[in-house]
Length: 186
Figure 1 (spheres, helix red, strand yellow):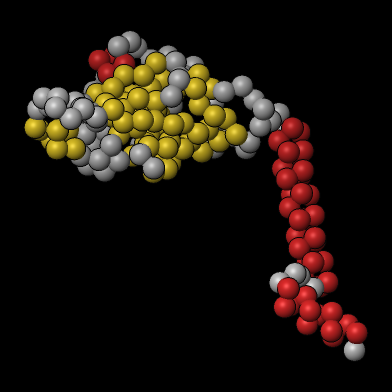
Figure 2: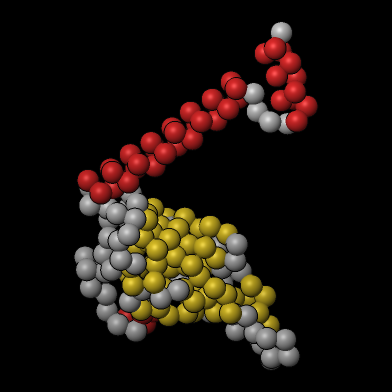
């Protein structure tokens, strides 16, 4: 009888009963074990969360994106064949220099079609490297200020950036509240 009264009182007060408390304790312990295992696996493979950030070597903004399409997107290109399959132009005019394929990768981040010119995309200078070969970049959009004269024409702004080589499993760009996973350029 005493246990039934304790359960009724706990339910009135809003505190968890003993079985609920035990279940929560086991869940917390399981989460802690998973975090520890993930950190151990990353350290064993040489991929630590404390790894140095990746430096963006070069970036150039363009009003008209060389990648075909009208939607926002991100593409990671790591060799000349993929570049040629995705973009019809050579890399020198877009980057200002020739690429050293095999030693560098190109990331193209594009907005959807815009009704005006003067919009630029800029990537942060450093990218966050996380466990399990994932790379996260933040991009910001610079729009003409109110009162600025901007030409009215359809544009698809993009930024073309050079990254150091990496066997990234996933590259994600945060752009205007969206997460854009970078697709392999094909």
